[in-house]
Amino acid sequence: MARFYPTGAMGGKAGSDECTGTAAELMKGYTAILRGSGDEPAEGQLELTGNAQAAHVLNGETFYTSDPKKRQSGTMQNRGGYWGWGNSKGNDGGNQRMWIRLPGGYYNENAEVYLSWEDIRNMAGITPEKVKKNEWILGIQGNFEGWVPAPQDLYYNGVNSVGFTPSVSGANARCEFQAQQIYFNSGTGSSSITSSAEVDITGCSYLVISGHDISLAKNDSVLNSYAVDVKINGTQIGTYLPSGDHAGGFRVNISSQAARRGVMQINIYSIKNNSIAASSKGYITKISLE
Image (cartoon, rainbow, N blue to C red; front, side, top):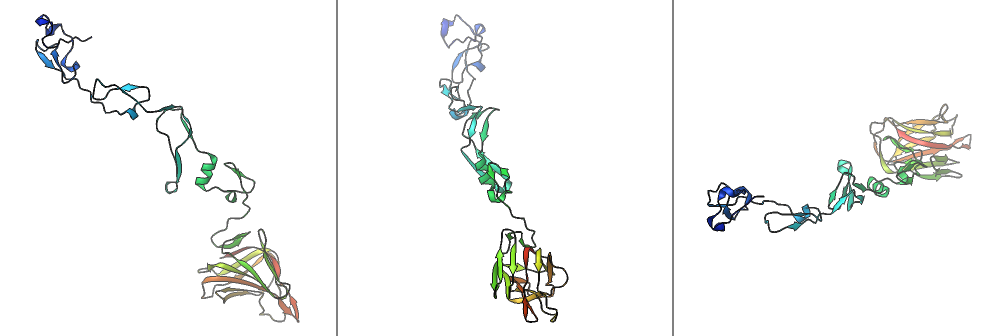
């Protein structure tokens, strides 16, 4: 233990050689006879320069900063091997990540912070409509039965990209949107579908209509009678005269038309053959541009 003799102590009977304390061990602002001070008072050099705050020190622990007479107590909560929820959470879409804000305090290497599956689904935008039917992801069961269309697909197995709506003209004509297909029967008139959104056919040469059990009316005596025509903003841009087998679909040439963008209408007609109307009918599963 270091020994100090305050100035004037011991009536001069003790000297600095008997002391073990040095100026480096005496608090700054105090004087004393110290080892090496030549029996003369020396000023202390020891100084506390801590800058910790109570919030930086664990609760229950004590510390000093700049005043050796003032012992302080820490207030930081020791959460140790915490497991629980964050204070707040969010989705940083720009950087493709999620974030959690933790309660303040000290955590050791065993700490765990949780996000619920519901939180993750909400932040990632995962809904049953976006998950394949009967598949489970993060606690929800998918119900998506549709198909993912390519950019050139206007309609694909129930996915109606341009908002086609049906209409008919004439007796017994039908046109209806079913789960994954469009059924048409022109009866003695016509079946039509019209887009709600504009369709851009710039750079495209054909409108391709695919499906099954398609039967288009023919007129052998009037060779130029078409069973299908396509219009943009009411202007005809292509026709199709049935020939050969088209049960699985057909292509309408639209390459030579000036009208390249607008509301599209596809009309499928019946054709009179020797005064008897032959209807067109079938199922459309895909309408695309190429």
